[in-house]
Length: 153
Image: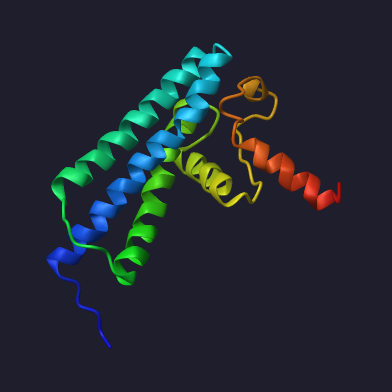
């Protein structure tokens, strides 16, 4: 069986992708609040830019591809695949803007490993002040928990 998507199918997929991107913007509020609590103003600006980009992209998708149709399983699978990629690219913005990564691809790799909790990191320099920036290390809580579980603690 060959699936031939129609324009309506793409509208449903991209509309739901827009919902996910807005959800990402709200999730990114956690490190923003952490940055503000620890007076990390540069990091707060980086996350503000990332939140703005994610919210604007999601809202744009909601406006351009608005539909009242309910998604089917094919739409859901496609929305997840597209959302996974876009959330990686948009979630990597604050990390790249922080200057702690050599390239944007390294930022994408790091945020993807944060989403999947695989504990992989690729900082530009391990002796820099990355450890002092609590908001950029906010997702590292999962890494620490994963590390303790690996040691049997």
